[in-house]
Image 1: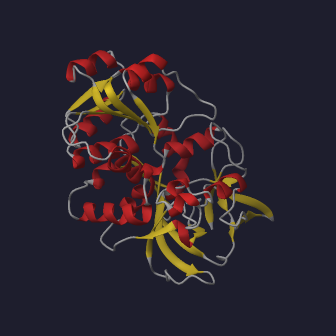
Image 2: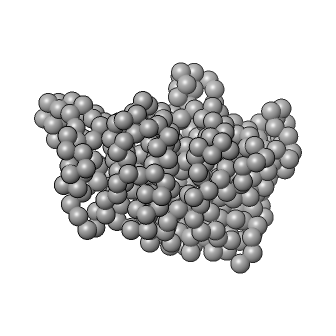
Length: 368
């Protein structure tokens, strides 16, 4: 099969032929129909986040099951599925208390570059190739654990299912799960990429007001306004804190940081009103830290929380997102940006770095 291969951090992806083993027990073979271009993949490509090499990246995708391994009973060939980069083992303490985004089994995949048993199904010329986060969907096919797929209704396009599996569930989930009840509360969202725009959709769905989006790309801010943001702030042209104080003089109840930059996180804390909460969503390079004024934290009772994968329970939340999309409550079609064949995947990441609008999507079976 054809796949995108990362040989060295900081190097372009190479498109070539790889061998893919048949699915083992509890695994499925998926024909990849669409794969989202995510900043997290870009972090791995640059080496800001580390994984075993060589590796096939891609962790946000959707497709059709072509074959199932021994013991698989919940899925059959022909089933349409969304891929998850956080499978649930169903047995660790986090799965048992309904927080599968923190599943302990995920660490096996991250550190080994394999699937849940720590081994790989990928190779080239007899050399082992690693999986990224147990998915590796920048390829025509992928083998994943049956615990890493969720059924997709026939009416949901593959591109929508793909971005729902990471960007949408992360952004919408940050509002619905990490924040929760916020009707009438002010939310500021830093970053208008795929996750930030998904957070806008979640904030609108939850009835927040005002919904303010901060970015440095005018086209992204225009998209945020079309999706329901009541205000936008171009941080390249105006002082963000002053602009937010003018919009909400008492401060914002909630802030979502979807970039992963220390300076932005610090601004987010600054613009919260007493008792406000910052939800950190964006990832940064390993070891990145930011400063929190201790007395502000204590005396004004501000809070800082992290939200991984939208703090979601994907087996419950993804079907709910699909239902909301089909009901017209989540206009996810607007989030899809440029489409790219697999051969132009490096162009997709270049566009992402340049501030492209919407979520880029790789279509592995499309020609140039």
